[in-house]
Image (tube, rainbow over all chains, first blue to last red; front, side):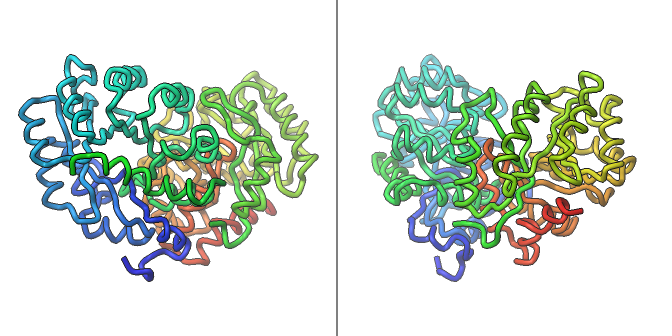
Length: 253
Length: 253
């Protein structure tokens, strides 16, 4: 990543060692020209000084989990850490194990992989993820708040990263954060007025990870929110990438 | 990170909201954030008025304008119901600004922006060459951007700001369609969805002179929109129009 590739307004970001937790890769039948292949995604990351990203493949959500994982393996890059699609299926779990995952992305939604988050359906998958300390990523739109609470209660060692909580979520999030130490959220849509710095004042920086929602959103938005939060430099670096590195480091990869 | 030039922000509020706890929302706390980001002017409307009570909400705005006349121009928020209240409010608070700044929220007031009960308000806005900020959302039956096309043509002296530009990607497309057909319409880019390349598309389709910086403070995070504008691939001249000149021009006309 060369310094000249970085947008001048975002030069300070290059010193943060940013690891973006919310990026998707590849062709999309839903988002068309807004989706990006590997080279264009890396260029977009370079514009903002983003070093690394945790990525899932659009094809996994839009078509087939295993097909998406194969494409993710083909199209990945050393700067992109894969968040593999996973399903509550013994065969898929065995295939997943061969990839030595550090992170998986679960898509419960009825228009995505269409499965229950409850133990009677996904218990075996969660046991594998807990045992191997795999970061378990999911988008809020795919799972109801009560189901998140039950999941965290039933599997207290599972590290759950909830993406795209939206900015109206504090009345759900705050009780969950008080009760469940292994819950984390990304910053991509946590964008109410001064919400990020207020969260840090209440819970500290360790439970927040930077997320851009590239390639659908511009990374400039979430980065500017983090850059202008009135928090310590140490907290900013933790959110920018330190927390995600710590979470991925616990996995089997 | 802060704006390189003092911003004229077309979309702000005063007050709290029912669906999530507000952070740092007092005028004095907002002024601190405005100074942090280099927002010189924030045009505000009452959140209370948008939700439930225009007379009381507009009175709250009047008090803030009295304390901080150099930083907060005020919109008069009106509801088409009950009949007669809107024109009384517009007359009562006619000293807020000239030309009048009017805020309509057809979504929360649950009445279509092109419906009969709004006609007296539009007629007033047309006669007074008012600036009218309308909350919009993609395809909404009360505030979909496409509803404003015929309104803009029928009341050509009103300057209509499409608040949030319809919010979603498709909402922006609908807003582009309206703005391309009516030169008295403008796009406000505030919103929780930071679509990549949408500012570039707006500038290419309509010209930068039709695009306005809006933050939605203290509802949404102003830095998010600042990051979108600073990272957009547009000329510095166009960026300055969006950040300041366009809304400054509307306030002075």
